[in-house]
Image 1 (cartoon, rainbow, N blue to C red):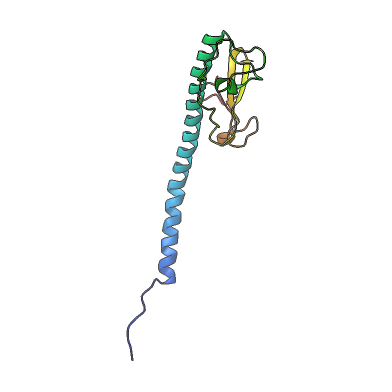
Image 2 (cartoon, rainbow, N blue to C red):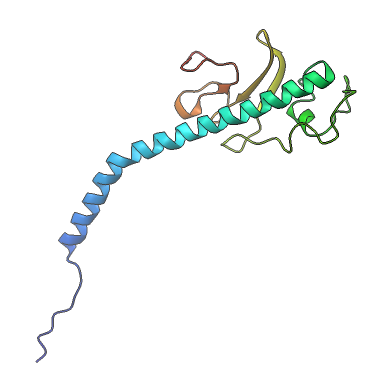
Amino acid sequence: MNNQRQGGFSLIEIMVVIVIMGLLLSVIGPTVWDAVSDAKTQTVKGHMAAFKTALQSYRLDNYNYPTTEQGLQALVTKPSSEPVPRKWRSEGYMEKISKDPWDRDYIYTKDSDGHPFNIVSLGGDGVPGGEGDDKDIGYWDEPGDESK
């Protein structure tokens, strides 16, 4: 008779490991999720800073910002609609227009709320308004301003 015991894990051992993993995830998960959310917000702010630089260069060359209709695309390809920029740079002002971290287009408007332009990301849900990850992020929003 062969008295060798088969190796393996008992049901109790497997359950203990699953419980430990669950506890770790419940502690670490929210921290990781917050870091991802913060990274997306910082990505939006970085994109907006790049847009601002390109828009200011466009304005210096052409004496005004692109119209709302021309949008941010005017920084990549020369607009054909009025007012057609007379001194548009042949290489453009940006190589491409990035999408927001949720893979949506940024919304650009000229002469918005007393500012020369505004750029908005509609957040995680893609609709105006929202809270938390779904909150809109506008170029002129003040940090910590929850009213917009």
